[in-house]
Length: 210
View 1 (cartoon, rainbow, N blue to C red):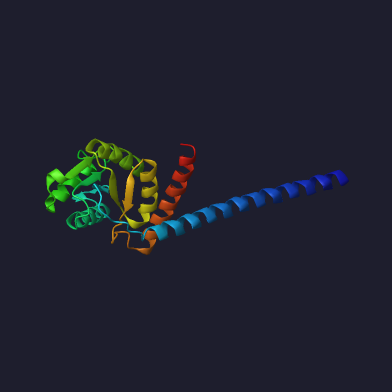
View 2: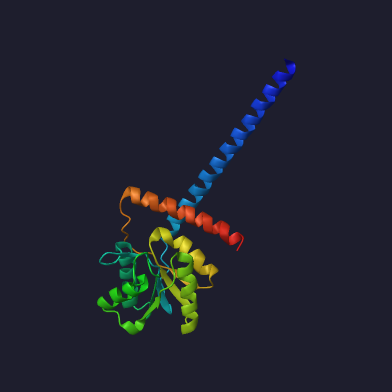
């Protein structure tokens, strides 16, 4: 009986240690998400716009009638920067989406032309599908054109991750988030923040082993 009692006590002790470990992991995850969310939110208000060789607009997909509403906000902001004289070149990024025969960048370029931007001032990066390849391919185009620095345009909550990736790709970049966003609803902003926090933490871990 004594042996069984000791065995039972040992089992309970092991279970408690396991539960403490699980609790520790949960608290660690919550802390990581909390820290990332606060940092992303604070960074989202940073606008470093200044004269640069090119404005890089990060892709955001298409809709049935052209660029998506989110992409359109980014393009409109790049137009503002262009017209205010911060740069005389706009580089739009984005490859072929599922079921599309035109690249995101091509459709975005046509949108810019419709808004009065000369075709010769528009560059296209048409092979990427995500932020990392957006910026990796954009760096190659910058090098081909002799560009040394860029203004990065995206949604506010996307900027911190985008700027970290730009730095890792060797781009001398300045942040300029869109002043407006289509993520206006409370739930959509929460979802976007959770997604960005997850991707930022994931990328941060990835770059440690890169």
